[in-house]
Image 1 (cartoon, rainbow, N blue to C red):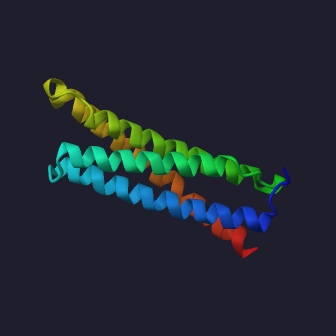
Image 2 (image 1 turned 135 degrees about the horizontal axis):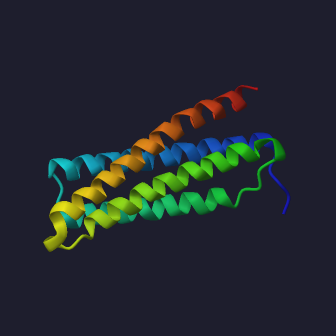
Length: 138
């Protein structure tokens, strides 16, 4: 398969970051609802399953892109950012699926782990968007 031109790759990367950002926002709202207790377990489960499927779809679509040589670093950084978001989603999924008997301590640890991954994602995501903007301006 032929590789993408730099412009095509950057446009697809921009679209990917937009999609990632939307899922991260949904994830953040879900975590806040769980912390505040304003969401029931079934609704949280449905939301996390949807987010998980979308993040996986985005990851596999983006992973398959054949980046031009000058954009390999950007490609890997975006994939890494997606992996961090997947870790946050997986930790939250584990939180939701903790049996009721274990809910107190174990669940709080899993929810905190999800929050940590989200913060890590946020710290990685912001510079990526700036880097992509710089590429697009050239």
